[in-house]
Length: 184
Length: 146
Image (cartoon, rainbow over all chains, first blue to last red; front, side, top):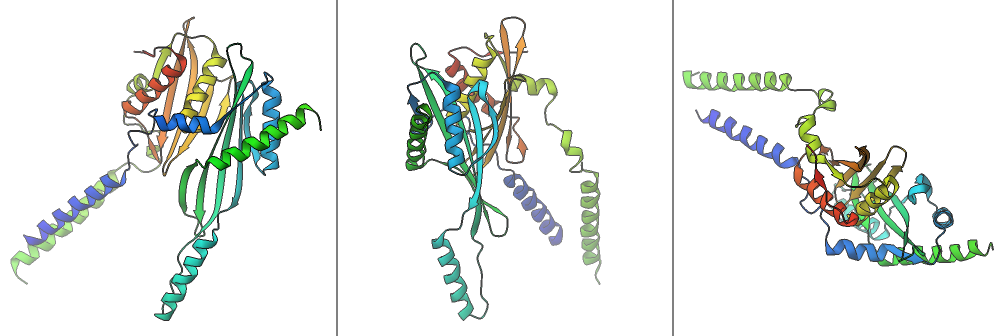
């Protein structure tokens, strides 16, 4: 009955693989952590105004300056959502693809590895009154992206936490708020 | 051909047939569209809490802030309907919709439902964690609703 044992083992292995494939939600996915607070600081700036709507409007203008298109907005809740599609090609990765292809070509069968080709960046921006007498407005912006390779397969789904990204965005927003306030 | 080998082949064949019959009897991918592992009542008790609040706009803003604190990017919000949807990308995709509805005259019912990659989230723990974060942001206690 060797064959029965073999089939039994295969069925068991198959069931195990199927069960392992169903990835479950990580325990920390919805848990507040100190990391979350650090993210909040990087993503938030305080503006000395109570005019939320003007601030939202300036923010939309900056997002447009950066090539984003508006996907949704809820002014009464202080929210704008925007997105941008762009290339995700990285010269370093292309160099590696070419190198692998060249080396494998010497062996007679060139292997062309897939490379990241495009990405979609999502951003949501919110405004909220703050301060003891609600004399300030907090602007919080969050970026994330999805990357696809040249075969159309998703290779990355990640938050964008680079500090300079947020710094640059808020520098542009500060400038825009100033320009809009002075109607330049 | 000896008898043992013939019997083994029959065993194998019957296994293959029973597997295909068993698979054939399974629900199709279309049947799964409205399926859920839990009853409507179980799901609601996991996914919703009541808060002693009446200010809809303020509550929605707190929900948006909480989602952002948890690493979500908000996709959509509607103050008339009382809904917020956001997505968290972190080598996975976690999409969540949070809605509010009045409960009696001095409470709001907050309901959340999440989708992790291609699965509905039906475990109680992630929702408990979400409501802990939301309660903290509201400085209020979340009441279990039966």
